[in-house]
Image 1 (cartoon, rainbow, N blue to C red):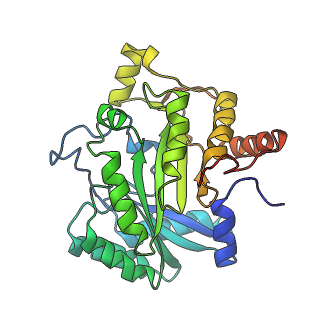
Image 2: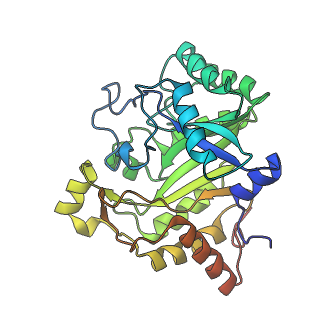
Length: 307
């Protein structure tokens, strides 16, 4: 049955005619808001340990991490190909010569058919894009930009130290090179209202992106935001799961129907999560509930999108 939203997983299955699994690697990169180039401390919400698989470590080679990831996923799935997912921190934040070494090592693995490179809008330039464009002629290449919000005040408050205008510029440069382009947004950042969030959908819809990742704001132990939440909880609108599901349906209605949805939510380890408490509900359960809500409301992604 055709989904009521544009599913990235369905696209991948159709494109490759088999299961394709991401294998995360930690290549030891940093970020300009961590190492002092722009600032210190990183994004206020960020703790990379919440999403790093057990087999990833910058102390291991790329090949070692890919092999361990493939071994792990091969126990669960059969006959699958892999994408090396450069996930931790900003994975274009290095000289091009270093990037070529890292990416080439991952692509040399016989089961790896492409790369997913997670980065920031201010950590890439045209020279690096030209290189990735050449790779995309042979491999499946995705550049995934962390944007998080279309509101510059929010971006400043969470210590991103880049603007939405910078993000728009680099996304346009990426898309012009026919590189698959993704964007990541966090729903419910401090002081953002429902109106602000739905405006994100409108602004995102103007971008030439292929893929969109969304997830609810989560307050994680050890982050600056956890301290802010403790001191000023009134600044936060941490949605309950059912409220979030309704919001996602509203969001989808406004979103350009050409944009593929890769993710709606994220799960952090229980021992690291402060809030919100969704009672252990899994990502796939949220997806099913969103699909059910779309059906109940007889609505679709893009039904309110204005071209």
